[in-house]
Amino acid sequence: MTLLPGSGDPHRFGTEAFYAALGRAFVAMCAVVPFLFLIEAVDQGLAFGLDPAAGIIPKRIDGLDGVFFSPFLHHGFDHLYSNSIPLILLGTFVLAAGARRFLWSTLIIVLVSGLGVWFTGSSNSVVVGASGVIFGYLGILLTRGIVERSWWNFAVFLLVGLLYGWQLVGILPTDERISWQGHLFGLLGGVVAAIIFRRRRPDIGGPYHSESTLTLP
Image (cartoon, rainbow, N blue to C red):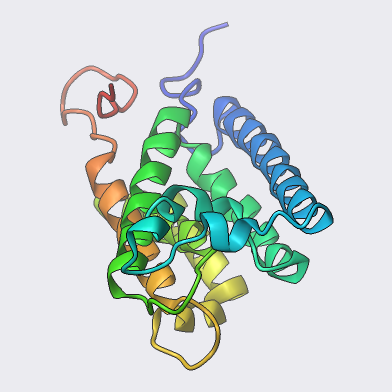
């Protein structure tokens, strides 16, 4: 049987490869959340005090390592519950576009969000949670829809916006006990990652081939 051009392209909406990649990404993200719950359960059950020990403490050197550790920590199970569904949903669509792009993009989001919090947050606070990463994935989907001219990514962004659009106010300064800096810089990190690791479109008029990707180390 002869396959149509692009029928095996996991980045092309509607192909079997596309749905297979989406399914694998969903399973992978569903496996991440129980790991986060395990960390929270161990922290609370054994009273390790991981939040102040491994969270981001702005403007303090001893709180700088929290840039890498804070996304895995939460202020209780309610905080983790509120992050779980958007993390699975957004992470699935970002991961489906490629594991390497997902990992490198996540690293950029973690760095931009974490360092942004460290430089601009209150030195009397301890910041933990995956919400900066979640806003970063939202930034990726929006930016990919624009720079890659991907209607699929843009449609996903609109869908998530309808479901969680009210959370976008979290990028604005507020008196509530949330890190709007983490949300804002996470979103910016996602925009940067989407631009750096964007997929190149094939040459117009040339023979068909799958869209090439940025070569990553």
